[in-house]
Image 1 (tube, one colour):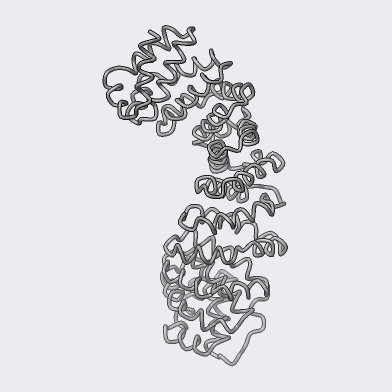
Image 2 (cartoon, rainbow, N blue to C red):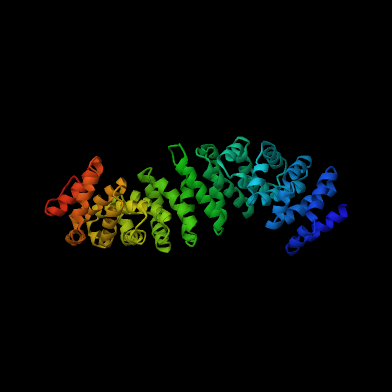
Length: 455
């Protein structure tokens, strides 16, 4: 039996043979080997290794799940948890089966199996075992309830153990992926932080593997969710982390997902304090963000976050000038024109342009092409209160600083749009103030309102 299963195991290393082996009933023979010779290490190991090899094939692993392979592998792992080679193969098989099978995930995500993972992690300081422990946790982090179970069973310590012990790319990638999935599904992920140890491990992975798009993207996604959801008042991401995020953006402009998540982290950070804003800018964030906007003109989610960063940064005079010098005005204007149906982007864009124009009036002409986009959106989205307020404020500042902008707004029937805005939002003081200010400026351009940005 050992020789027969060993032969199947040898053939299983050839991926082109997977279909033939599956169709010929090899999976049934391997599972019989686990069942009838479960106490024989040699036979069981040959079987589990062959199952792990075959599970790389979607066709084969689907057949395995339907044949009841998952509970048999878990039982075998319990029996041979002291043997690192066996554990590595068994975990690899479970990772492959659970990747695209909800049934396999459900059967694997149990207290019993997570206990096996924890025991294996503590007993075997071996690269393959640690990698598979982190990879299986990542794969099983597919819902809030399962993430809570993993968290309660010590999943974070298992991930940190693997990442601290081995700097190899596969281990670090598995660890960052696990943190990403856990942080995505947990609504209160502060328990993931471990007093900053988790952030340090993630940043170390980014520093060690700058060319890995997967590690950089997973790390940025994890840091974004941790920053966005955390209840802590102090920043989650360290200065080294900020530098790594900006570097990731600069190195991987082709990855829109990475840029989206990186902008999300930076947006969370720059809203905290002027010191953090300056730190982010000093690391080259403005050039990275504006370049990302140019390279990905049709990614509304990323563009919204990018404008969010710029809106926070441009509230400070010197930083607003830096954004303007990086062609930020024309880049934001073009992003808004290309994505005229994305209200979040339009709102953030209006705020960014208003901030810059208020501090640097000379840029108003550069921003003027966005006027038609803003007025059309005001007509189309009358119930979007937040956007209406930002749009009115932008029109107000543009009209107050540039006669050509005044003329353009009037030519596009801006007064009528502002009147409708006032009527439709009569109960909202913020919109009322902004719309009245813009209306008064256009109706009587010589009257400058020094209280434009009061309150």
